[in-house]
Length: 383
Image 1 (cartoon, one colour):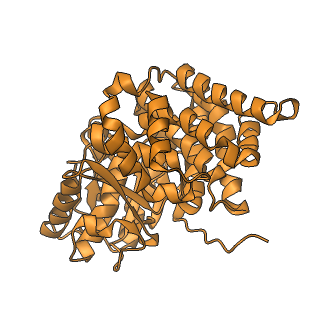
Image 2 (cartoon, one colour):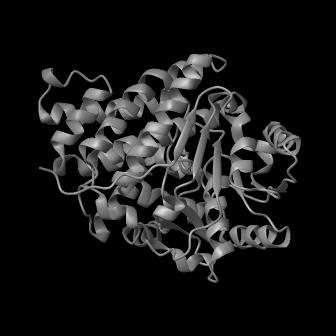
């Protein structure tokens, strides 16, 4: 028998046209002045206008907050909460990738709790839930639309921190694959690899369970099959839908099984160097798998099998090598080339990055708990 495990998820509507249901849900939540949290890229793609028009047609008065950057900052969450109060908003709709959705979650809890956003860092530190939250993802990767995580950048320390709470789970996720057609190729690649890392880390997490395994391994299979295909044929609706479905599956897995060293290290990198999160994950995955493998060989064997590696024909060491090579070849096939050093990473940064990563809550469920010198070496290997 397994230890007790809980599983949390929002109400999910998946499929083409899901975005068009946003106004109906906002009305059902009693909205009059809904707040749309988004970013400039999503606005330029036309999705903000579409959502705003849908809300207006229902007699609502939407207010748009688009001051969200990649790796959302603590002050942006505070500004968003002030915007929410000043405009007498009552429901939040997050439209975009992980950054707007993470920021929207933080805005929500700041609007109902008299505390600074940094005070919520850690697990189960949110006393009062935020207002109703509807998430509409426009990328197939972050899975913030189904997770109990919000990742915010502490700008004083240049360090990302995690707010992990059941109150961070959105009320509704409207997952519409059509929104991903406006992603450029590199964003498609980075968010797809982000979803893969979510699934792999959930699969080998010490908090995994048969329930999360259902989602993690299916996500791995779908991503390995469809990410290269969507890169070659970005207008193919089937591949886009499969990647969006994989992202959802990976999110349900990691939200409930948590993550590991890849994310702990990526949060550290993103906070210090402002590298896109999915790109960080893609560049770190191989080095972390090589570090972890000996502590969870049977779990990684299942991961390798889901990646279509012929594990029955290989020894344990052979599986480890094949898995590392598969990760590397997939990353390069989708166009994420080079290493951390080509993104501005230097040897001089490693000490600080390693300290920040070691204190990240995602490290708690990594299959191998490292010491500081080991994390430094993993960073060095990814240079």
